[in-house]
Amino acid sequence: MSTYMAKAQDVARKWYLIDAAGKPLGRVATQAATLLRGKHKPVFTPHADCGDHVVIINAEKAVLTGKKLEQKYYYRHTGYIGNHKKVRYDRLMETKPEFVVYKAVKGMLPDNTLGRKALTRLRVSASAEHPHQSQKPEEWAL
Image (tube, rainbow, N blue to C red; front, side):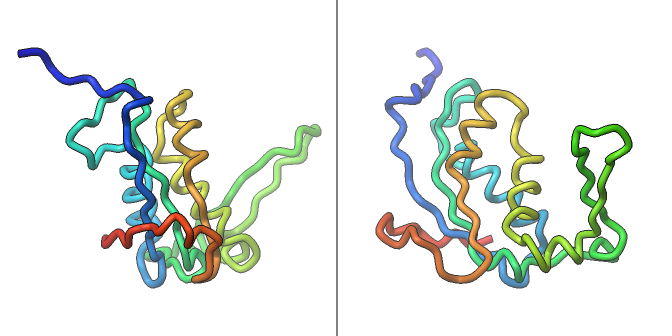
């Protein structure tokens, strides 16, 4: 008997809802990355795109453990000489909490075409309201 290999066109995609309120950012991101890749399915195939859609709500209420809020920085470069910017995570959580969760999930996905494709199925909302009620996402318990 040969091993079953899932094909991307045969995969049935579901919608999952993750509530990040009061939960560590890393735990939420790992669960989202697992769902986006499809590793929770029995038909998971590493070379095929068999993941699901993920909606993360309450991103502004996610917690960073320890002293990460004061000690962790987000770095970026503007493209100009000497313009290396850094922003502390407490400031970033106040202004763009969706971006913080998005970056955490992006860091846990592979850096290839499968990871980029999986990231298009991620939706992050800072509050409890999201525009994807019509898809009837299932609640995913951490």
